[in-house]
Amino acid sequence: MSGGRTAKQADLKYVQEKENKAMSAIFQLRLAK
Image (tube, rainbow, N blue to C red; front, side, top):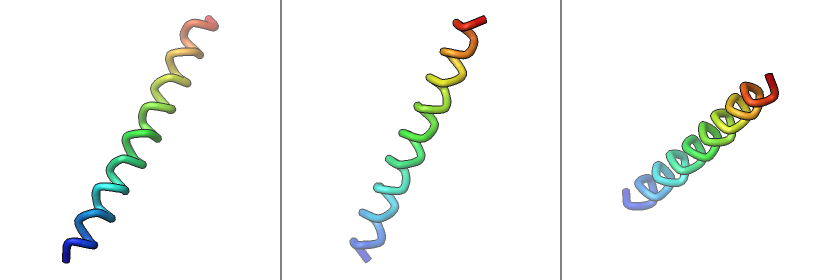
């Protein structure tokens, strides 16, 4: 079951990175205006 936990942590890290990229993209778009 520990394998499932590490997979969950990896997914969480992936989602956080995706959100960070989305936030930075929105931030840059606002600066562009």
